[in-house]
Image (cartoon, rainbow, N blue to C red; front, side):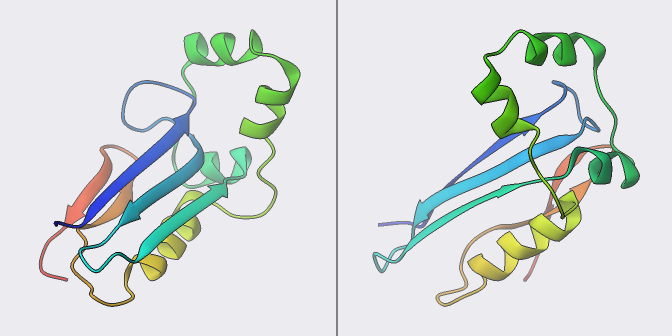
Length: 115
């Protein structure tokens, strides 16, 4: 069995460079070890790191129910790079054979070769 990892991002747009609101990951490695990760990102801190919003997507978010909107926009402390670093550290545990990515405001998640 190969390592399998799914990552889900909630964002304020469909194109690279839009604010990331949440990052979730779930997976299992070839030894049966599970990884589960979920973190909410402070919207303003995402903007501080160079991300922006798509007005059309923000309008879509405003049409969602209150609980969904609160969940998506309730990040309180960390920016996107901090959260990606946390996810990286979570995935760095043995067997260390995951594929790693770095957050890039203009292109999204970029693969990091040879880690």
